[in-house]
Length: 355
Image 1 (cartoon, rainbow, N blue to C red):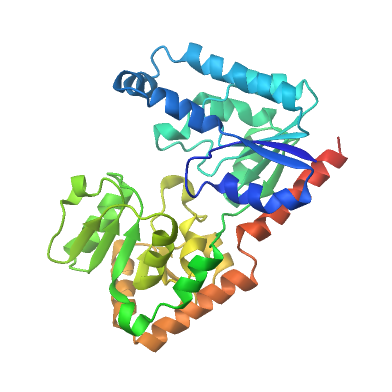
Image 2: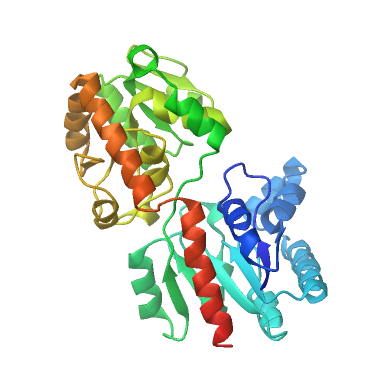
């Protein structure tokens, strides 16, 4: 099996890199074509290009050029499968030409094909390409139902939840953290800002005088640097990200519109490293974790305030019990990307056998 992945190389936690790493020993060849990085680097090269791309003014000739270059690469490489992550700016015409070569095309959109909250979620090309794919992985069961309702059932759909991938050295450092000494007995939120959901929810908690530390690029523009009960820090990545998840008493998880009733990446990353997660109530969260023993769920600001106070006031032993149970659930239930890769390989083999 020969696979070409159209995805990001530059993002430190890009899902495609996890899958390539864990699938490589089981396939003949798998490589990455950094499609979104190529587009981003060009249009991010100057202020004029950034504005041009943001407003989609006169960008089509260059986007078409990038599509042609990708198509030529596919023709030379001739993989069995082209696996597209998200697919922003990848034109349906390009996918049609790839299919005409007898190559199977697959999609996995970690955002959402229909609920595109930000410009980074893509334009009409995302939705128009859906019926062209031979296989679509969906992180959400609700999304599977929606695609089935909108499009022909000929599209093969497979549920592929998010997961986690913690380097062994980082896991060892996290296990060595002495919570009696190093635990930060505050709430923590890690992620970029938006003015609607994240800012509003965090603002409400801050108004209620809950102790919160916020990590992410750009939050100082919303909150300033520090107030009585909270602090704002720059983003944390790599090992710092994982150890920050572990050190705080509790981590707040906030859904964006496309995650409602489902889950997001934090859903698995927080418990896997041994963090206590305060997350939106959803059907999938209840399927993945045992409520109160492994995860705390909320449906409103009032509920989040109540469970936050409860978690902050519980003893260290009680907190350790939740941390341990959450991490054990993650390991024993095979929530890692290494295990998720088995789902992908099984689906790929089935698709090629039906060819």
